[in-house]
Length: 132
Image (cartoon, rainbow, N blue to C red; front, side):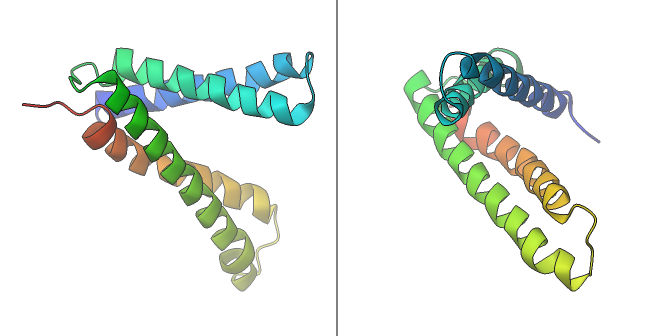
């Protein structure tokens, strides 16, 4: 069964993704595309950190500097996982299955979904842990 905390984590992540996407559109009115993407990514990460701290892992009692450090580390691992999984499906799995219906888009979707679970575990046990 899916826990309330995990659902809150998914909602927080979805909200952060919307902030990322929406702020990129706004930033693009003021600057070139690549800097807008970078700033939007930062805005999304700050949103995700704040929402997870306030609404998902409310009992965390480790220091905020430790939370920020682990948050970055867990998210770096998630990006690596997303890239690896996306490439594996797009370059090896789907060609082996002779699947040619939007293979990169579907591979990327799979690559984005998998780290939701591993990130949740990482944030629960490292980023927002409770200390005795």
